Image 1 (tube, rainbow, N blue to C red):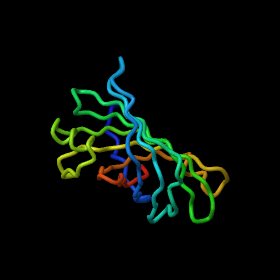
Image 2 (tube, rainbow, N blue to C red; image 1 turned 60 degrees about the vertical axis):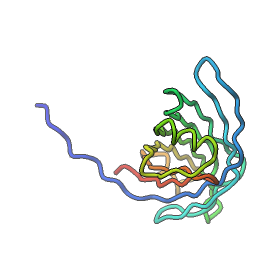
Image 3 (cartoon, one colour; image 1 turned 180 degrees about the vertical axis):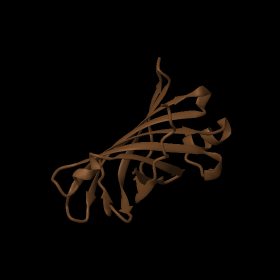
Image 4 (cartoon, helix red, strand yellow; image 1 turned 135 degrees about the vertical axis):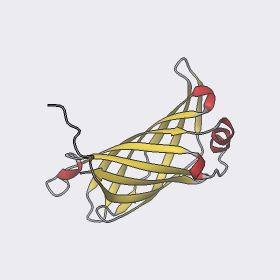
Length: 157
């Protein structure tokens, strides 16, 4: 018999403030407009994860929809307070009006309530202590600022 299952619950894992440097414009390709945003660092704070974002990652962007959709693929490493390193691959969708999208691309502030920014981070760490990161699904929400990206990650339980 077909029955609707109860919806999953969300458990707040952490908040991230990711610092970035100027975008590297790749240009218009057959797939769309490509950009790469270098990740220069950041902080991670929350009830389940605390540490810092290490420099050296990047956010690879594909801009579609006449400039109103950004398909994001960010890859970076978090170093937790205990020294454990966590690999993060975070895919996201950011949708905004053409005007707000152009503001974001120029590095100007926008009203976060006017932007749809959701993500699906995958987290991996070595060792038993943090094994649950690889055995869980995560979703999140984001906000782009001129000098960085702010994210909140939630574990789907």
